[in-house]
Length: 345
Image (cartoon, rainbow, N blue to C red):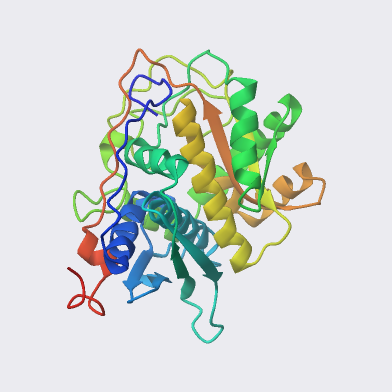
């Protein structure tokens, strides 16, 4: 979304057709670095091979206290996978996605292989440009309602990636608010979790974590509480509320690593579509992190699905400047091109 809260209007150029596949793979992996991740941990590493791109977990950037099962880790990596898929499509390459291809290598999450030349996908090109402006805006939203057509388009983007987005009604939002408040209380009492959160919100450099500029200067007065980061930031929040916000529950049929990965791909599709439409997105993961409140979310799904993440959708207040982008790791730290370095031109 643009800084003024309006839908993004993009211009783009047709990518060059003569570049080698290895260059396209390396650039897609680098572009995937724009993907959102829990606490901006960027827990992925890409290996570029002559005709394949591999996605692996970086365990050093897993939130072991907050996310011991690796659910949010896989969702974060799934978002990066979707970004890479789009980047390749924008360059005119179609790929076969192999998810969790080798049980003997649990940290190998996916391979992009079987690449064929096709025409450059103009929709993917627009989405790649949206990656560069997408950000998390934790300010309260404006009183402008999210258009029903936008919610429908966002929901269809999620469904295309094999997940579902259940939009919560007013009674369910109140249940969500109570669950989010309860989860916040439980997490505030966990010293290991607070220490971990403090680490990722106190990194002044290094390319990861959440700097003060993206954290609210005080807790917004909203119906559904956001995460208490344990410290204040410098982001002015303004006088708004979340009365016009729409809350959605990203969910699916299974609660296994491959479904978490697909949930991340769906989250990427959701967020990029929302950005194109001028809709602000804030993920709320705290209520999913606590087993008891995660079960509450299952009840909101009538026990027919598994919750992966809550998202707040809204129209940002155009009168207040949005937050800056969170930092990113240097490409050389997340993309390994050593296997093809001598072959690239």
